[in-house]
Image (cartoon, rainbow, N blue to C red; front, side):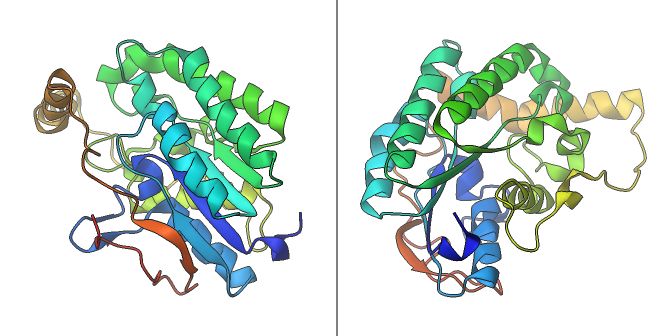
Length: 270
């Protein structure tokens, strides 16, 4: 499909696609999907963009809640990025999660939609306390690749590049990308889709930075555990999600301003 044909872009997923880490709930979230929509608009003015992603959503919820809404919008381009919330759960099953994602891929491509997704970095390289999750990340990435291959889905292989685990690409909670990280994700997806003006610059490392000493690094781990890991575990124990009571920030196809001001995006309606 030619780039000029991308006139209706719909993003499905969880907090990363919603834009958590790039802005806030008071001023509004931007995020990589918004940035990708802006890139599309530079090449094809008049493109419409909807973002159905909601933080905390599991792959099953993306399939059950977001897929019908996405199909109703009749997109010609969709991005589907989910599964991290699943792999953080004690009962994670890579085949089950991959099956939900594959069902979304199949339904969208079956309607002639161009679909893009991405693989995930090893979270253990972002925070040492998450190292036991590495096998889960690799298993999920394998299922995503297999499903994508079967359905002709474009994959942005972010997992293959060291830069994606640079701390500067991640927010303080180490679960969500920083503004710079969201910009790199958008660039990776644009590159995978071969959009005009895209290239592999997103794979290049950032300038060197001072490496913290062992004592400072250990203090940082303790601070992170108290500020972010503890509250996250408490929500799990209580059976709550960060997305409880939230709706999609941009449920309708609305015009995109390539300068960065998306009509209808932001904190309103949350």
